[in-house]
Image (cartoon, rainbow, N blue to C red):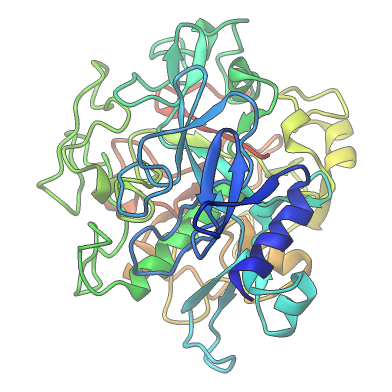
Amino acid sequence: MSALGAFQKLFDLVGGVRAKRSMAGGVVLSSGGMEIPVGANLNAIGNPGQQGFGVGICPALPTGFSAMYGTSDPASDNYGNYQYTDGSVMVWVPAFFYKIGTGSNGLGVNRVDIRAYAAFANVAAANAEGFALHRAFYNAGAIQLGVFVDKYQCSNNSGVASSVKNGNPLSSSSAHNPFGGLTGAPANNYGGAIAAAKTRGITFFCASLFVHKMLALLSLAHAQASTGTAFCAWFDAAGVTNFPKGNNNNALRDANDATLLYVSDGYSNCAKTGSSNALARTTHNGQACGVADLNGNMWEIAPGLTSDGANYYLLKIAANITTATGGNALATDLWGATGLVALYDNVGTTYESMTASNTNKVFGAATQVLSPAISGTAWAMTGAGIPLVTGVSGSNAFGTDYFYDARPNELCVISGAAWVHGGTAGVWALLLDHVRGNSNHHVGFRSASYL
């Protein structure tokens, strides 16, 4: 698709975004005070292994957002980064299509191919070539052009849960930067993260499981395509530690990278947000413009998958996560019988690697790890980062990340691990044994927002 064709597609979707001719004659996009030449970088995810991959230029800034110095420059540390009125820095991740290799579909087993949203005329055209739009880019029954994701884990910024560098990360425990210290005193439990995210504004939500594992998939694709550290600071040519690093060795360092060092937030070995001495080695794309600290420091509450103790439930495409609430009684609640009926699809008592075994499993395998499905439950579960039954024997490509298999009532999934989990921490790590009412000093969250 040509640059003009890609622009027209975006123009049709966002509506009201104004195109005009620049003095040089090139089409530009006027959005939120920015005028950006239309081209490969407009709402494009970029190419795995290359500069600027995994982030992009937002096509139409919502009220309250502004560009930063270098936002439209792929070579800048601020590429694809935007600031909200509270000072939060958020990263725009454009919608993209992906294809997961099976060994018989044109890609090797577990290889990931990423294509820009504008690469196909529509989802059906992408599906016809074996590509799927990631589940993270659906909300309230509609396709989303991308998603703003907090660059940093949330901290208390004068009562607001903000994404700011060197903040003290919020936790669900009264002992450690509690949610309850925010405006409105959200509950100091996992369910309280839903209200805590709203202290920034009604469009913000606790980043979903789909958002977290979308970033993990981008990291995997970038690892596979990179050939050096120029555009992927955490790259490992041997493939042993070829994934984002973080604060996870219980000593403000990374278990796989002893040169990485964080600044303590004053509580145990938790670190201040984004405080490492090498930020790019801690981001999803190995560049300073990426989303930081998805590996370790604090487990992150990631709604989207739950259980009533008997069955697993996955958030419907039709559900609106921006209006979801954190209780267990209302139709908008992410937990409880009423919310399960209103917001979720029942996927049964087990699904592939989720067998309610109450055992620790390890992400990755030489065999198929994630389903290559382009629709249905299997596609949605890939979007949630749930491995196939063949995908949990452990492999370096997936960081040998922690996957605890359980099925408690009011399951609240947490992602990424904390400062104590060593080599089992990582962008794929998941615990399925925690519940809505839990409080924990090393469990917090980050926020996200759609247009």
